[in-house]
Image (cartoon, rainbow, N blue to C red; front, side, top):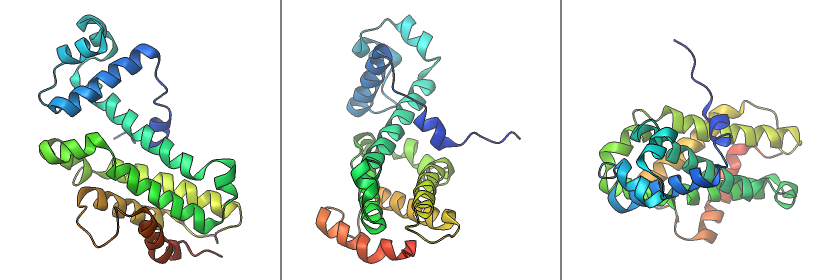
Amino acid sequence: MAKLAKLLPLVRGSGPEDHNQAKVLDAALMAFLDFGIKRTSMVEVARRGGVSLATLYRRFAGKNDLIQAVGLRQARQLVDEVDAAVQGPIERDASAEEQIIALFVAFIEGLRGNQLLGRLLKTEPEIVLPYLTVQGAPVIELGRDYLAEFIARLQAEGKLPQYDPLPLAETIARAALSLALTPQTVIPLDDPDALRQFARDHIVPGFRIL
């Protein structure tokens, strides 16, 4: 069986969209939020996007392709948000501890603040849960590879010792996904300052800062 392409490069390469594509994906997202995925038709997306049904089908062969495009866009937006927290010139000059805290908080807040994910978990869990649990390997891979890339950069900058970043990266990715799926926790997710302190006390030590 052929090996599947890595998801992180696919997500990063999924945009930005041209104006018409962006309008259609915006329309699809709003329809999914209003009606859910099952009740959203291609006709409704075409109407909201201001395109003909024929044009919509020229861009997306079917509803599953449209759902995948919206999902890739949502993933890219999360990656962009986390990048913004740690990749700017000022952020990259920060200590390893501060970068780790910023990344963890951005990762958690991005997952928990995703409107589509929240909507589907409440109203259509049978659609989304398999892709986040028993079939969740691609999602875990995305978070793991992003975090491993982040750790490798800090190692190259001499801010972390050399070690295999993948086990730690996967542990954190799995923990973040669990918090998004099951928000009932003693971890102070709704208090940004307390969440930063939690990360300082419990997440940072795992990175073995020099």
